[in-house]
Amino acid sequence: MKIEQIPTPAYVVDETRLTENLKILDRVQKESGCKILLAQKAFSMFYEYPLIGKYLCGTTASGLYEARLGKEEMGKENHVFAPAFRENEIDELADICDHIVFNSVSQLKKYGPRCSGRSSVGLRINPEYSTQKDHAIYDPCAPGSRLGVTSANLRHAVEENPDVLEHVDGFHIHTLCEQNSDDLAATFEVFERNFSKYFGALKWINLGGGHHITKSDYDVERLVELIRYIRKKYDVEVYLEPGEAVALNAGYLVTEVLDIVDNGIKTLILDTSAACHMPDVLEMPYRPPLQDAGEKGEKRYDYRLSSYTCLAGDIIGDYSFDRPVQVRDRLYFLDMAIYSMVKNNTFNGIGLPSIYARKADGECVLVKAFDYKDFKERLS
Image 1 (cartoon, rainbow, N blue to C red):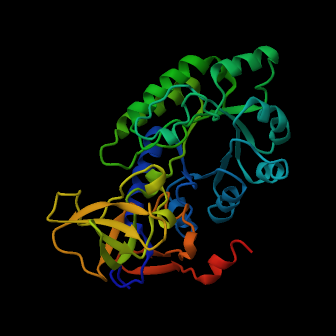
Image 2: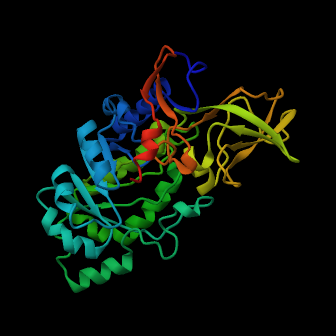
């Protein structure tokens, strides 16, 4: 079945584009000697884990369920970080994860000795150096951020107990969001200046995610140079854990126009929803790319795209087209593999889109279809 024939709404993951991304990431691994992990918080369609596992070294998780998924479905290196861990989950995490990263000194003290020897123990560091501009909601270095240990807090902990880091094998930093390697280099310079005195006993440094490595303008050479520098100077393993870069531009959300309403603005009512099927549109917010469409006023015919939920603010954005749009026309939102499927929901009783994999020959294979039962059994 071709993409033009599948029932809507549907997510379609393009395996050709996914493979192109993976080859770029594999090049970074080979040229720098680092290890790259899939951040499942962005993309956890485990149907594609056998393909991803051919190129990447494993997965990273934000909690027990993702950690279990990575262990069961990819079966390679399996890492986990969370702002705090639950008492009744820590032993299972230590048993199934190769690395477990704690967010605070108090969590390290509580669980570090218990996990050491079962899992490599890490500590998340807050370099207190923000490179964010338009994504404040995703800024781990914002003033008062709860994410990571600051220089002052770590210094105080070491002064209080010189052995506080005895179980720590690695440091983890994650400060980026859709950024280039120049921001990473600037961040590492600050991180190195303020924390290198603690690097002596480390076995690894994890540079987190947010690296837009597979974007066309990303400076891969600078990234490779930085990783080589870290590995040579400090004799540590270096990890990256991108999510977005793995499936960047590898997904579509296919939708159909159900109606056209004109109450002063020509609005297309679609069988998809920002609130339900692409929540980042409202959370970040951002305007998702749409195939063969332009900015408002760029092309001849302007429309506002909305959904069939009752939420007045369920607006996807304003677009323009070369020709008038008709009821039953199909539209194709782009870059819908990451942070869309993992966040979708059934608000208003709206069904979840089916999931397809688009093979190299253009055929779309149904991976998962959802129905009323998936909505009903969520809450009772």
